[in-house]
Amino acid sequence: MNDLTAPPQKASDWLALGIQHLERDERVLAAEALRHALQDRETRLTAHQLIEQHTLPGAFSQMMGLNCEIARADDIFRFFEGHPSSTNPLRDYLADGWRTLSELMTLLEAVDRPLLKTPRFMEFASGHGRFTRHLVKALGADRVTVSDVVPDAMAFAQRTFGVRSVLSSTVPESLVWDQQYDVVFVLSLFSHLPRRTWARWLQCLYDGVAPGGVLVFSTHGLKAAAHDSVALDEDGFFFAPSSESQAIDVQEYGTAFTSEDFVLARIAETVGADKLVHRSLVHFWNHQDAYVLARP
Image 1 (spheres, rainbow, N blue to C red):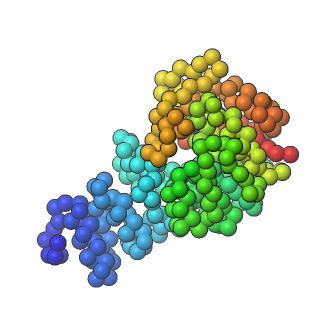
Image 2: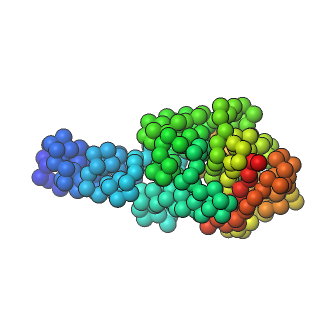
């Protein structure tokens, strides 16, 4: 499209117009054109990345003071984008990471482990950085390590946020810790695990906690099960081979629901009941239960 005077009719034309204005260093005009491209799902992420990379007027980074680029393969962003309640998926995605930060901080304060005093933090099952970007702003990249089973997620996190990344595995026993961490944070992994690996991952992740540190993890508890009309089995467990992830086998990463008794039993048989120092039901996202295990 060469005519910069004719108003575009399609999102792809708005995107092309924005790129042309960027090439001419017409930043205000570029931002205006790209805002139109944000309205269409097909051009939204490309337009968003251009706005953020060039810090154009309206960039989220200008408001939030952190890197707001979003990976094209980010399943969590796609979840927000496809959710009927989300009228602004970019804003909702970024704000949700900030909410997780505040929820984690209150949880760590309850066990006298202030986040800002954490020397070594591991975010496990970190995905493409919905939460990582906010964690880096709070702690600095040098104190943060992320781990995920998706190689693209690790490459994006390392490149975009400057954190150290460790590629994980679908087999718990294959994960080798090269160091231990003062906080190992595992948000919404146990809410996706099948029964056969649930307790094995609990043991594996606890092994990554340094002496005096804590493991924080979340589960789909009774409120989440009731919301989704899920009936738990006699052990208090339910698993379905379905999730928002497009990159992981649904037999390894589906959707799981657990009763509090199920979780307490797994804690007792793996690391010992005395390691549980705090629990907060319906803590994360107003539907996931939180548990904190301490290593003496």
